[in-house]
Image 1 (spheres, one colour):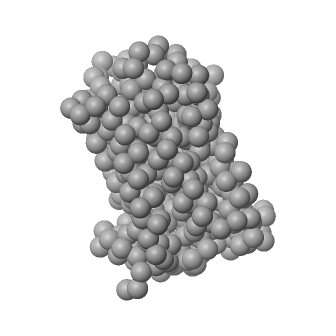
Image 2: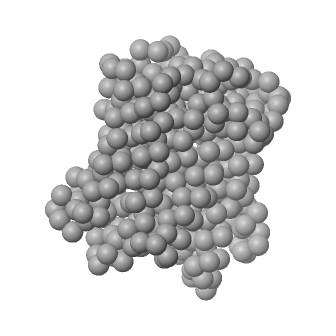
Length: 379
C-alpha cells in the first residue's frame, strides 16, 4: 500500500475541513456585524449545500478530463481563490456567489479524495483507514472555530489562514499515484435514482447522516435552549455529540475489519434508533451526557460504514461515480433535515429533532432487515 499517498490525500482533505471550520463561522459573524438578520445569514449558509449538488455532477467529468490528482489541485486552488475574495471583496451578493463556488470546488475535492483513499487502502485495513479519514475530518472541522477564536473575528486573518491552507495543500499531491481512473461524464439525478434503487440501505444511511450533521450544528443548540438549558450548556451538548461522532469512529473502523460489516451497520442503525428515542426521556438527567456520545457515534458510524461498503464494492470510474452520489445525497440531506426538523419543532412537537432522527433510523432498521439488503439490486 502507498502510505505516503494515503497521508498526502488525507492531509489535503483535512485542510479543507479546517479551512471551512475557520471561514464559515467568520462569514456568519461578519454578516451579523453588518446588521443582516437570521434569514439572510441562513440563505448564505445554504449556498454551499447547493454548491455540493452542482459539484457532484461535475466531479467525474473534470477528473476524466485532467485526472484525479490535477482535478483535486485545481479545485483546492479554486477554493483558496474564493475564500481569499471573501476578504478582498466584502459584500452580500458577491459573497453568495463565492460561497456557491466554494461549495462546488470543495465538493469535488471530497468526492475525489474519498475515492482515492478507498482505491488505495487494502481490504484488511479498509475499516480502520476509512474511519481514520472520517474521524480526522470531523476533528479538523471541530478545530476550525478554535483556530478562529485564536486568530480573532474582527479582522480578516481567518480568511487568509484558510486561503493559505488551500494554497499549500495541493503541493502534497504532486507525484502521487494510485488514483482512480475515470471517464469524463456527468453524474445526473437519474443516475442517483438508479444508485438509490440498487443500494437503498447505503443511500438512506448517507442522507440520514447528512441530515443529522446539519441538524446538530444548526438546530440542536436551539432545541436545548427551548428545553430550558443555558447557552453554555446547549453549546457543550453540541460539542459532546460531535466529539462522540469523531472519536468513536476509529473503534468502529477496527470492528469493521474484525467482524461482519453488515452486522455492525445494522447495530449502528438500531443504536441510533434507541438513543434518539431516549433523548426526550433522559434530557434532564446526568445520563444524557453519555447518551449524546452514543447518539453521535452511532450516526457517524453509519456514514463511515457506508464509505467502507462502497469501497469494497467499486473501483475506478464506478467508485468516483458512487462517491458523487454520496455527495448528492449529502446535499439533499443537509437541505431537507433542518427544514423538516424546524417545521416539526414549530408545528408538531418540541422534541421534533430527536423524533425525526428516530423515524429515519427506524426506516433504516427496516431496510437492513430485508433479505439481501446490502447486495446491489439487479439492473
